Length: 193
Image (cartoon, rainbow, N blue to C red):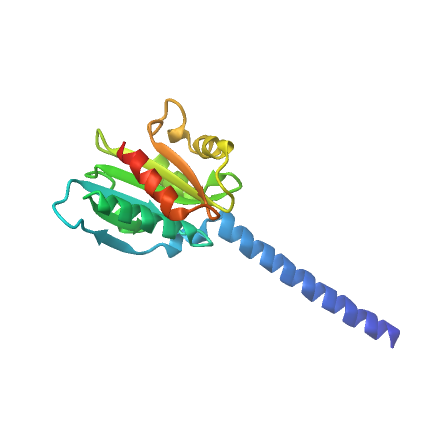
């Protein structure tokens, strides 16, 4: 009888351990395989109130919390308010494949462990722009921005480093606890220069 009870306890422990392993594997896949990027499938064009003074492309990786998508929408609206025609698109959409013909390109997504997601790194590493295109990069995270955040983002993407193809890009990190409207507006002003 006691042996039967021990087997039941062992089976329960084994099931709990298996569930734990499955959860850890699923979370690892979400972070390391950047599965959240595949949820950013929308493409939207925003037209200015009056005449268009140029074009902008805003690409985003939604991440797990959705903060990056909200920031991308705020940034796109800010560019639209500056008389630009804006294409707002998920980072894995067909719109993300064509990056020439824009005056401004902004790319962003969440920051995990101090670095941009794999999808953001990939787009930045392979970005093709026209001469004179202004490029901005934003990262979103939980905490307010620290002085080390920008360096970590730049260090995570060779193209953003000194001497890299995008070394002149404006790079910011915006924390969920910060005023997203104000920070997005300030970022747009920096990119427009």
